[in-house]
Length: 196
Image 1 (spheres, one colour):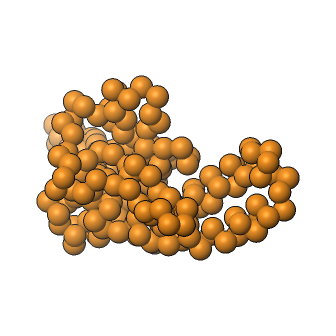
Image 2 (cartoon, rainbow, N blue to C red):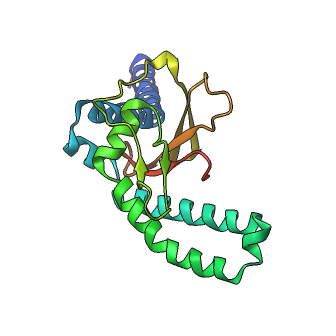
């Protein structure tokens, strides 16, 4: 093998490795763009292939339950009340129903298309479970209207956070994707403001 062939093979291998690394690093951003495109187009099949709904539901349930527990522990009146723990146990069923209502293809598509979480998820009896604008009533924000930050949590988890810079005090909400194979990603967690 001549020297020029070895250089050519080495250069080809380096280009291949660089392309694999670039694809590996860019694949979650491409997956988010696919999720956003499916949400804006109303493509339920595309959305369902990009979202692990059981994982999203379980994560939302754990966030809401942790938030309820934190509020119970922070409020001195509730902390010392023996009926507060009983009420919290009853609200677990309401939380489960709220999450089942929220973690649907339509609700997630609306959130991704508008770059906003729902205004509220209520565990209060009698209140609407999810207060969220309808997709046709709310136009998607322009890209410049929303701050988006991307970052790897680890090699298999990637987070995108969204925040409206006009709402200075607003906490960002996030979408966490998990690697499924070498280049495939699925949404597994929605981080709602005030619950994380």
